[in-house]
Image 1 (cartoon, rainbow, N blue to C red):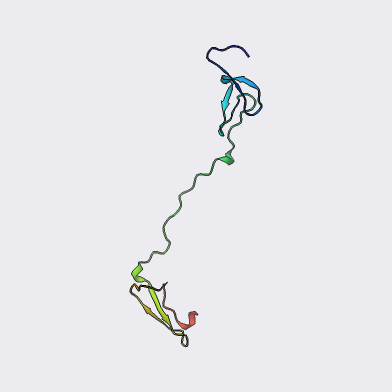
Image 2 (cartoon, rainbow, N blue to C red):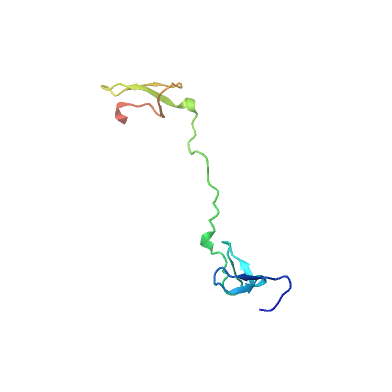
Length: 102
């Protein structure tokens, strides 16, 4: 190890040998290692894949006013009373319920 003005000695984080700082290199994970023996490039598996363009839209778009709300279902006939307006409390049903559906 010869003298170089402005250079300083460091210890390699991987092998522990003392080297000049000009002979070492910082790795992707923050280790200061020997450039000729200990340094390795970052492996591809540590780079997350770039996401491809995803479709963020809903496949079937309906206005809320076109939905039907079930008010109640008769236990004997299994017929429902449906209101097309926005109730205060109810379930969203996209088609009217009949006895055959249950």
